[in-house]
Length: 190
Image (tube, rainbow, N blue to C red; front, side, top):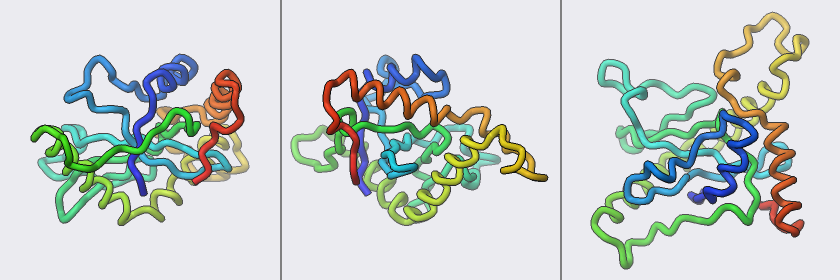
């Protein structure tokens, strides 16, 4: 697995079309932290799954919450180090993502501290790679079938689908972005 950053322009373009696309928080970043995530192939299209650092909502009585289908919490050596937000994954053209440099050369101490966190997150992701792919495919399928009563039969439609991006719309917008860029070599094939 590789950590990627995705361009602010592409995130803004998608967010203009679906308000559930996570903001890149360009103006609010600490240490110019880019919009980070991993890329998986989902539905014959690469998807960027946003990575998020732990925050107060991830804890109950001082203990980290458990993972859900839509949110994979990352643990490395009994330390909660972040989460992947599968309900906010977006289609990712190759032209808009770039691998993160995790080397320590020419980095400040703050940057090195951040890289150490990223390495822990990446190690935690590697431990559950298969689970991430399975869950991402299920979240995707559930969202596409959100209003299909035959798909759900007697099951309850999960509430997290209300906060899940519109995958069909975003795939169309991704293809529009690629066409606007004037090349057909923008789809990542990993």
